[in-house]
Amino acid sequence: MLVHTVLLLRKVSNVGEKESECTFEKYGIFAPSFIFQLCRYRYPQDKKRPLMATISQAGLEDVSELNRLVNAAYRGESSTAGWTHEADLLEGIRIDEEQLASIINRKDTFLLKYTEDKNIAGCVLLEKQGEELYLGMLTVNPLLQAKGIGKALLSSAENKARETGCKKIKMTVITLRTELISWYKRHGYSDTGAREPFPVQDSKWGTPRLPLQFMVMEKELR
Image 1 (tube, rainbow, N blue to C red):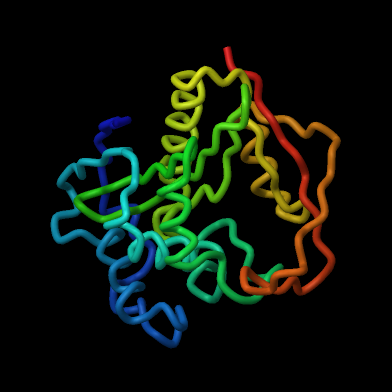
Image 2: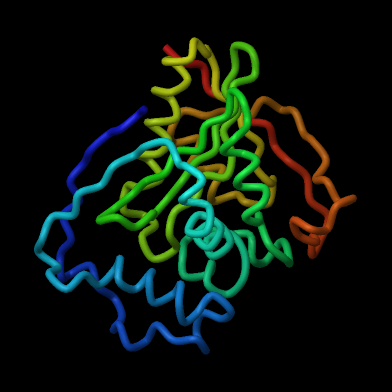
């Protein structure tokens, strides 16, 4: 099992809004149960206490929590609390519990979770494809973005690639998500020039609000 441990130091100066502002009206269908869970991440009772975090393989027992996290980070009003999301590009859900369970049980597929004080704050999907590792569904709690969690998950993904003998990481990103593409480029990923159509046959995973396509990005590993 892949487990990395880090210490995250929370400072009172990082708090930008009051806990009472985390309301159903502000964050939509994921409130109150999930959005108040997000608030507990951002506003721990002891803000000066270092929080222990681990990155490890997700299991079937994590499916419900991962389902709430991924959908809250990608779609709907709750996702707009973060710096990057798909809410303005797609309607509907990003994933469901059945698909998550299938991913966890799939051969040569790894779903890594970032756990902080027993709460899942992020995840990333990895699939071994020959000598390449496909990376997808990189997710961070909207209220914890820009705090290094995504970078930690990306680093763990690259370590997993080396561990499984992969020489390259490949991913697809919606071309209109320019801020996310820039973030990946800063971490060594490049645009291959290839484009793939966005699947529109199955609206179960979201209905595009406008025409979409994927950019294929990759990173050679040393």
